[in-house]
Length: 60
Image (cartoon, rainbow, N blue to C red; front, side):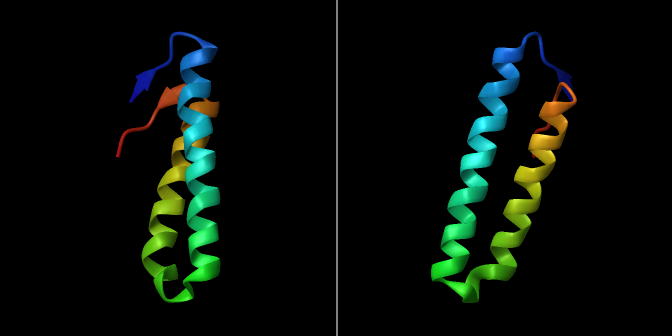
């Protein structure tokens, strides 16, 4: 894990992760058969957000 140098780097990681979660939830809503595989991607995006809030970059 790498520590962020400033808040803008942190935001540039957190926002796309949030958008990804929204997109995946929408996809699950319209395609419930894919829920199991998409839940793993949602979990990874949540971990990215948690790490970003603590000031670290999480890479998968």
